[in-house]
Image (cartoon, rainbow, N blue to C red):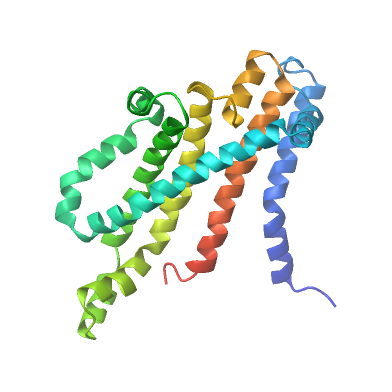
Length: 259
């Protein structure tokens, strides 16, 4: 039975991202084969994949990978618990939001790495600093998007709920918060990606003995290029996986967004 064109288009659309990945690997292999870059500085994809496999099979890189995952998820959870209620509160009152808008935009625009010395003074060299600075950066991302989503909830639906007898709290829970969910999920995706970036940078520069950031830096210092690229690849896979997970959650729970 001949497959309908729609089915084929859906399958081809699902495979499209793989085409870009395959094209990148082929281009990388071609650069290595032509020796356009010193082989010491740019190993082949096969060498990097072997280093990645050995690192996970041997346990060293697997430990670093899951340590980074743990730090990222913990900092994101802290950011979520703080930012969502604060975002709802700020978005519900334009006067309050206007009062703190400068502070939110200022810290959101400040590179997180510039805040490392401040967090080092507050929390010292250790695990708390990595978690705190990542949670702070992610919280600002989530806070801004939650507040924006609440402020831009459709007024007609809010008015309709009030006309039908819903009180202020019921309108907030059943209408405004649901209306803000699409923008909230955008903030969550941006927040967890930002948390991962900060965690990896913190692992590089704030006295770490494990984590993917530390693995990248140590491999670069001793010129173990396949291991360095393998750790970078592992970080990229982790970031892509987290983003994909939130996209799937968004499609599952906010499929009605924009309708």
